[in-house]
Amino acid sequence: MNCVFCEILAGRIPASFVYRDERVAAFMDIQPVNAGHVLIVPVAHAASLEEVSERDGAAMLSVAQRLAGALKASGIRCEGVNLFLANGEAAGQEVSHVHLHVFPRFVEDGFGLKFPPNYSRKPSRRALEEDAEAIRQVLK
Ligand code: AMP
Image (tube, rainbow, N blue to C red; front, top):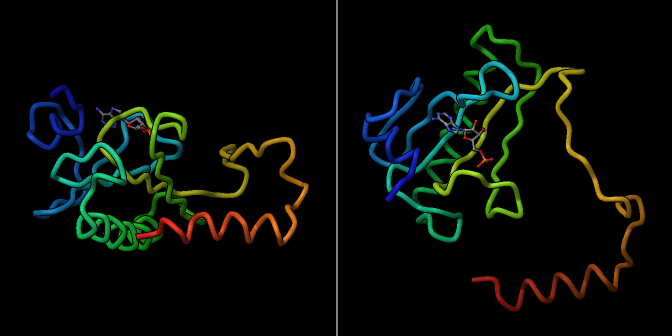
């Protein structure tokens, strides 16, 4: 398998680690949105959120929580923190080893999300209820 994050975890590609335990690891993103941008990955390869075990997923979020605090205390410019996870190519996932981005934000740092043109039109309660029901039906 040709997975860049597995190669990093195996020590065959250089990375700057900030955390590692038996379940998860965190290292600096090679192309940061802002300085301090960290990626959290499960040690066991999982391509997507659907594949990652619930325990590894929970461990990723737990480390993200700690990292958010660490970023604020680190001296790196950090007025706020974003967590971002692209699950699937259509969502912007480029590396097929699930990873949670944790990166510092500050006012006017130039980063932003682009919303679709119809975003300002709120759906009816009925439409929201229909979507909620469709999700409830399959939620495990
Ligand atoms: P995504 O678009 O959510 O799949 O993000 C993939 C992230 O992996 C990007 O932010 C890349 O900069 C980062 N990345 C790719 N290769 C490496 C690498 N060798 N070391 C650290 N980060 C990497």
